[in-house]
Length: 194
Image (cartoon, rainbow, N blue to C red; front, side):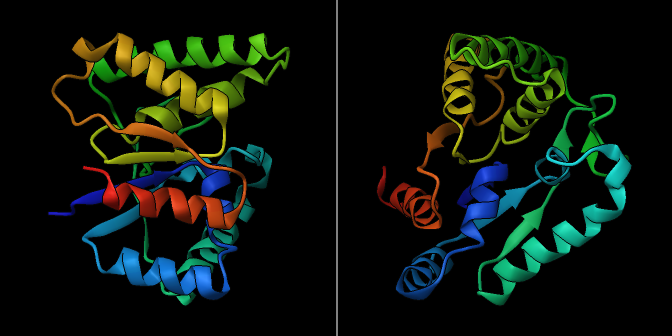
């Protein structure tokens, strides 16, 4: 059984693949010595691209995975939890429980409210993608993100709705600065937290 599962959002995934030099070697040494996995779903890759460019999906996934694996960092693609029309892909998504669906709805509302409070109107489909990204790591150890609204919304919804997800392990979302080194540090610090 894997002790640490780190679920990466789009920004964290993309930035971690840029890790190089001494920081890369430190990360690999510490990460690979633990029973840990890095995980993401198709949603992170698809969210920046319209459905008209589905052809690019495999190219992007292959490139990201190859970069990370060529650097000695193992990453695993898993199904997203929940099926959302115009977002979810067949064979890459699983139907969720009623509790997870309720959490998704609350995350959708909270992320939207956070974006509005920043006076940034985010595309409603991007908010829905963020919400599906947030429910997918339920049962994992950590959600790593570079998006403050996503992080704060996730932690708030989980704290206020524990009864909805009491049957699953609930990760804490962690925010990292937008650099490959910050993402790596955020992951490595999790090993020393008890």
